[in-house]
Image 1: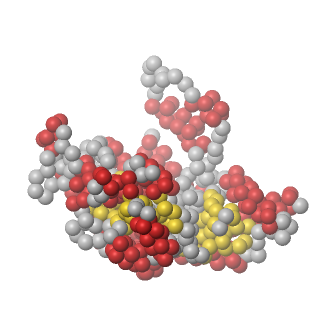
Image 2: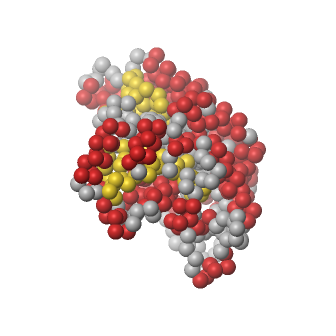
Image 3: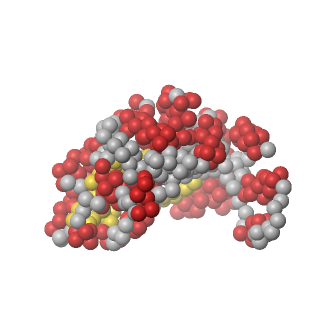
Length: 457
C-alpha cells in the first residue's frame, strides 16, 4: 500500500494541485485525539494520512512551488531514504557501522572535490544548513582561548541567513558582538566597510574573530566576493565561513564555477544536498579545510563509549559534530549519484540557471512587472506594478497578489524585502519545473494582479 501510494504520488505530482492550509481549529477537530488504547488496521491509518494530513500541506517538490528554497528530490534519494529507515543503522561510530561510515566519507570526498577543497579537509553530514552553520561556529570558536571569548566579534552581511544569528545565540555570543555590515548596491558583502569595522573594533579592545559570507543568499541568490573576503581574512587572521547551503551545487556548471570562484579558500563551507542536489529532507553538510579541527572541537570519550575509540584510519562521525545518534544520511546521496551520475546533477544546475534567466526575460517582456534585483544563480526577484494603484500601495498589492496566487493552488511563491520594498521571488532548483510552468505562473500573476488593482480603484 505504501509502495503504491509513493509511486502514484511521485509520478502524478506535476498534475496535482499544490496543496492547502487549514486553521488550528479545523485540524484539531480532525486530528486532535487521545492515543488509542487498541491498535487499528494499517489500511485505516493510511487512509487517514491520505485524507486528513496530505491535503493540508503544500508540496514543496511540485514544479510550480518556487517559494523560499524548494525541495525536489530525485527518486533514487526517496529509495535511499526508505532503505536508511529500514536498515536503521547507527552511524555515529565506526565500530557499529564501518560500511555506512565509509559511504559518508566517499560522499564527503565527492563534495570536497567539487568545491576544490584539499584531500585532508574533513566534513560531516548534518540535518541541514542550520546545524552545519552552528557546527562551523563551534569549530571556529575552539581556536579562541576561553579568556578571550567575551571579546569575540562576528562579522556578517545584512543579507545573511537567520540561522547564523541563531547559531551565534546558541554558542553564547552577545548580540552586541554580531556586526552586521550593510551590503553594497549589488547586495554583496561590502569589503571596505568590513575592513573599516574591524579596525574600529580592534581599537576598542574587541577581538575580530570570524566572517560569514554568502554563496547564494536566500533573498536574491547573491554571491559575495569570495577572493576579496579570503584575502582580507588571511591578512587579518579571521576565520572565513561560507554559507553555500542553497547555491553550492551551481559550482558544477561553468557559470556557477565562475560565480563561486574563491569558495575553496574558505575555512569552512555549509552545503545543503536537500536543496539543489535533489535529496529528500533532511540532508545538510559542513566541510572544514583544516580537518582535525572538527575532532578537536567535538570529540569526547565517556566511560560508556570506551569501546568505540577509533583505530588508525577509522572515523567516528560522532566525534565530528553535535549528534551521537546519527542516521545513515549518506546512503540516499550515494545512491542518487551512483544511479543518475554526476552529469545529471550538472545538467540540473545548468537547467535551473537557464530557467531563472528565462523567467526574468518573460517578466521583463510583460508590461506589468519590475525586476527588483537582476537574476543571481537561480533566483529572480520582481514585483507587480500597476498605474491604476498609487505606488505607495504596491507593497500591499504584491502581498495580496502572492496570497491569492497560493489560494489558487496552482502555484506558490514567497515574498521578501529588497531595499525596504516588497518583492516576489522565484527560486529554481526542481528538476520537474519547465518553461511551461513559468509561462503559466507569469500569466497567473498578471491576471490576478490586474484583478486586485481593479478592486483597489
